Length: 108
Image (cartoon, rainbow, N blue to C red; front, side, top):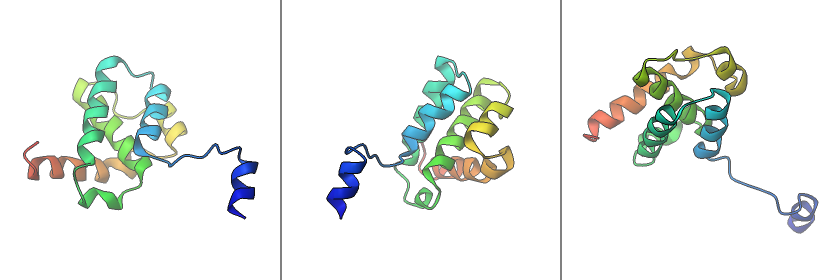
């Protein structure tokens, strides 16, 4: 049965990683290089925390974009990001705060 499914999908499968979501969200936000680099750094930092595993990869990616946009002083969340992510700012603020707490706890 597994072979039938894989053949039907032509072996085009992937794991929904946070990085895959991040790339999509950055495109939707028309992010500049600075926002892209900061959000990638923030997201990479989440890989070191066991406590952050409870969050969906899509929420970690969205929170990384939120934090990066805040860091550079641009609008933290936009209608385009809301449409692409299906999250409003309130849905991810607690995730962003958890990321910050983890970075402080780990002296990052």
